[in-house]
Amino acid sequence: MSSPASASVEERAQEEMARLDAYRSQLNAMLSQLQMLQSSRMDHERAQRSLDGIERAEAGREFLIPLGGETYVRGTVQRGTPVLIGIGSGVTVELPREQVVETLAQRITRIDSATRELEGQIRTFEDRIQWLSQRLEALARGEPVPPGSADSDVGGD
Image 1 (cartoon, rainbow, N blue to C red):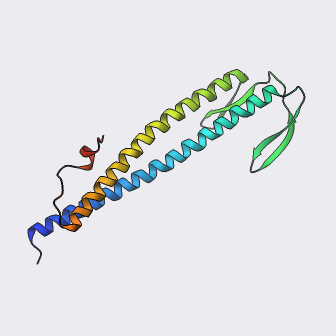
Image 2 (spheres, helix red, strand yellow):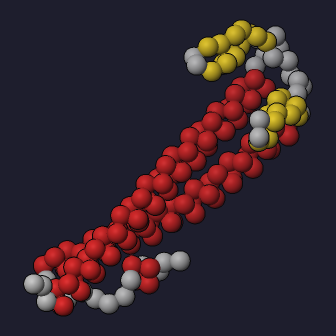
Image 3 (cartoon, rainbow, N blue to C red):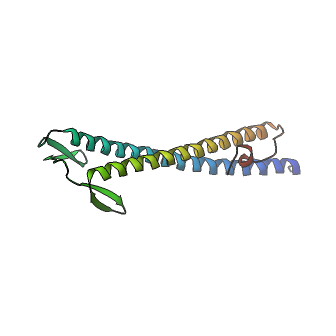
């Protein structure tokens, strides 16, 4: 039969392992969100560059217009022509080019802000995971484990 002290260490280790698994799952979800933000930023920058290229092109110049899936159509773009932009929920509106450029810049600013915030949260979870891993290693070696929690020791929420 195991002693009460060893049962307590085993229970603590199981609790810490469960918390570690939860943190790792949350970290993976955040990393997926970060990838989506980075992809969205690249799309918005590509749209900005395309609009700038069209604005600088000579009148009547032919362009390849991407449709998706590596499919294109030939067309010409006239200066001053309104631009279609998605505003969410599958809704697209037609706006003057200048307003679309401004909207794209605002979106990139918001994406950058969300990215910085998410990167901070990721660092916090990485710290928590490291702290819990060290704590579990100490438990496994039978060493004393510092009191506290990953939340309080790494400046958590």
